[in-house]
Length: 327
Image (cartoon, rainbow, N blue to C red; front, side, top):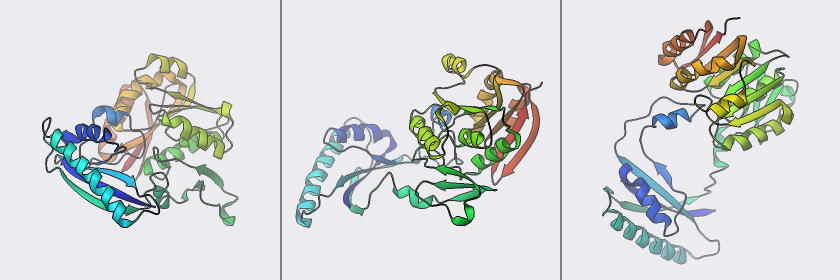
C-alpha cells in the first residue's frame, strides 16, 4: 500500500491552527513532530515506560498528513491529485499567516509505503523473560522449551507499556515477593493491566486497577481474556484516585494488602498521602517509574506519609521503592 505524504515545516505556535484549517479541506489525522516538553497535566496522565526529558524546544514543528493512493491509478493521475492538494495546503498556510507565525510554512510531497499505524510497531516487540516469567505478544508462538514456564500473553496495543521496561520489571519482582493467596491488590495507573493480571497469576485473590485513560478498558479486557483471568478477579476504574472522591470511594478504604504504582516520581509524591488511606495495616506499597535522580524525593514522601521503608531496588537508570504501612 502506498501513500502520499505532505510534510509541513512550521512553528509549534501554529500547530493547532494549521491542523484545524487543513481539517476543513479533508486532511485529518496529523502526525506531529516537535520538541515541546510535556505539561504537568500530561505528565500526570502518563503512567508507564516514561523516558527522561528530551531535547529543548526549538519552536519548530513538522506536521505530516497522509493520503492513500488508490490502486490502479496512473502515476500521472496520482501526481495531479497531489498537486491539487498541495495547492489547497499552500492556500491554507497563507490564510493562517494572518493569525499566527507559521514559520517556514514549506511543504514537502513524498511517497511512503506500508503505512500501518496499528501494526508496524509490533516488529520491535518480541517475547522476553523477567526471571522465570515469559512475556509473549499474541502474534508469537510459545517455544516448546518454554511451555512449562509461567507465561503472560500480552497485546498492549499502541497506548500502553508492554512489560519490557525496567520499571515494570522491578514492580513484577516485588509483587511476586509479597503476594499470597489472600492478597487484594490495587494497581494505580494500570495501563494494559500487566501488574494486576500478573498478581492474580501469582496467586492474588483479586485486583483493582485505576487509570485516567478510557483506552485502558479495552487493553485490560483483551489481556485478561488472553490470560484466562475471570472477569470477577479484576475490576478497572477510570479516574484519578489522587483527587476524585468518587474514585476514592469506589476503590474503598483500608482494604488492600498490596498497592502498586508504576508512575512518575512527581505523581508518586502526590499519590502517597492519599493511597495509605486505601491500605490495610501492614500492607505493602510498591512504587516504580522513578529515575535515580528522584529516588530521595520518593523515599522522603514515603516516610513523610508514615510508611516504613523496606527496600529500594534498582535496574538500569530506574528505581523501585517498597514500603509498609505500620500494623
